[in-house]
Amino acid sequence: FSRTNFGPEKLKLFSGSCYLPHPDKEDYGGEDAHFICVDEQTIGVADGVGGWADVGVNAGLFAQELMSHSVRAVEEEPKGSVDPASVLEKAHSFTKAKGSSTACIISLSDTGLHAINLGDSGFIVIRDGCTIFRSPVQQHDFNFTYQLESGNGCDLPSSGEVCCH
Image (cartoon, rainbow, N blue to C red; front, side, top):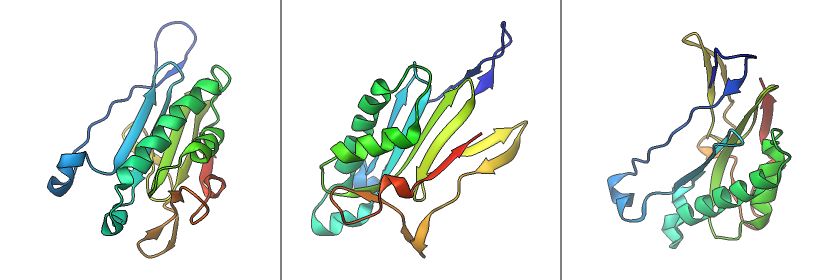
């Protein structure tokens, strides 16, 4: 994001996306998903857990459904005041696809950057070329990150790391 030079200073989010799935996963687009809500200056990413492929489940469907429900939840939030933790909570409650993923949702408002991160997805705040904040990785043990799953088998959105800058 950047500050504009016109009138009162306002923060503005500039975002984009690109997927480069592993060659073995190109046929179905990989296991990741995202959303960008330009008007509400909110973005999110879900990194589907590829281990589900061992039992015949495409975790990308879970990640896609989670991000789709996130868009609906953002649209239900008060204008100019998106609460990423609330968005993730609502989106997770409506996601029924099999699979699991990590998740990160960030919203920019006049009061700053608000975020929730669960697992090893994440974000970095860079100012003047220097990293001033990096969201922490959440893991239960080596190579076992926090993750959301449909049903009651995994971590909950309330386990996510909430932060404001």
